[in-house]
Image (cartoon, rainbow, N blue to C red; front, side):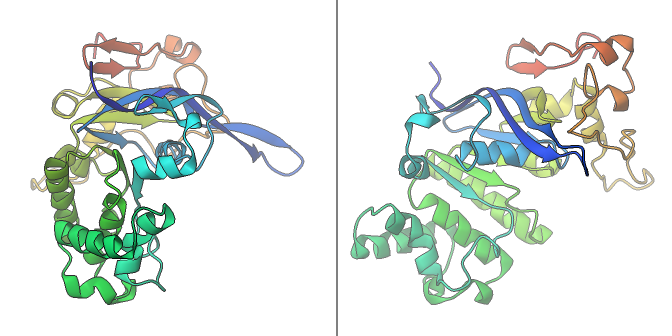
Length: 319
């Protein structure tokens, strides 16, 4: 039996949003019945365009939002049976902007030790020892302990965020665009750090990103999200070598390449992302899909799973 760290089962999150003046409120399904599992030691990359629901999934897993329906299980236990302290012990986030996620009035040592102090784990002596240990693990010099975030580089600040997330030795680290606010050279340093820590500490990552090159480098498995649904899921190598869903194919076709003469890539998706308050009928991707026909406009496709791969498309066999 696989050692499942996280299970999302038919998870849905619906918000009530204004439809305009004198129109009242309408439903916006940010997450629309997704099912995902994450085994110990895996890196699951969750990718898709802005607004597809990736960050809402992160908020649900961190218990910052409550699901409208469906279930989340952490280490086999329903998330609803866990109190906030237990969730914090098992799941820790690394956010996008390392400056915005760090308290500018606190020193590096105070920031890193915050989870220990908030959860009352150990005493002051053990806090100092653990801070020193984790700073060494993530590559932060000891003298930076008394510095403040504004005295650090972007890469150093993100290492502080990683150290804070790991000091509790969580079962799951949730990375929400952890390198997108950094320079390219610094991105590589942080990605290599995350990969090394995964090997050395046996970490499990849920890695949310729109950067496919980063996901290909780090993830062991990838789930592609579109308008609140998982439209394709597969091991990383399989998905990048042989994408099956038209949306996945378009995303991979949008990646810039250094090869001369190719020019800018064309996704052929147009510029209009569907209105999530008023999603298209049938398959929600059909207005942008080059293979769509009348069946796609009228009927939503049934997700088909074969082996370790899932594709949600009427033409999966042809693709």
